[in-house]
Length: 255
Image (cartoon, rainbow, N blue to C red; front, top):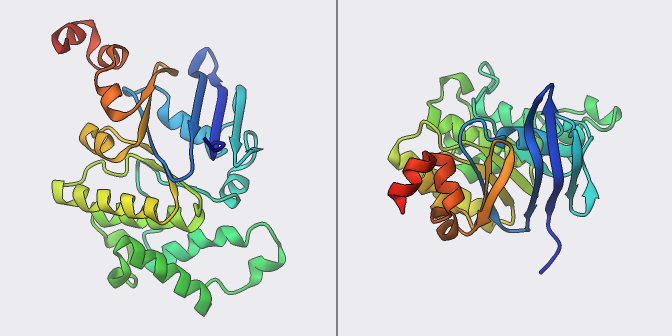
């Protein structure tokens, strides 16, 4: 098997006396969709924030494409081709849909002072941003103010902005939350197309049907620790996972 695209070893994060992530190991391979599951408070979003540089690990290592990224600033992590979405979608409401994607593409300028002064509305930039909107099904809404979009389209815009940064890896944090059944189906198809285009995906999702249908493998956390890893079928029948979600009583009933 080839080396992992993303490799996490002994990852821990402590906030005062609370160990939010506790000695987690995880590997994600190119072209894979990996699910990160767990009850509320399990440490999933903290893991995302550690990967993206929002938090510095208390211990452990994070390697991306063989190089350590733990301790890098968020913009440095993003510059390596890692993008993410957020649980709560907050676009630049007064800007258009197209302008929101153009802003995300600005990551390519921030590393050099001279490039910051170039036009971010140039023809090439607009064409690249429109290509991303076409990819997520929002091209016809490019000129609309982002603050006027319904939740389903906001989720798509968030993914477009993540793709503007994440050319190699995208982290999806509850991107299906709050959507209707038909919106979920369309977003599932989009995520599959993104993977077919060569982007690797790590996702947090509480909708178990979505997770089981999309993911190649799943890692489950509980109280900051990894308690299970396997295929969707294996995870569904794992006693530790059943107990984490349902408690000991639920485990007996599930058996």
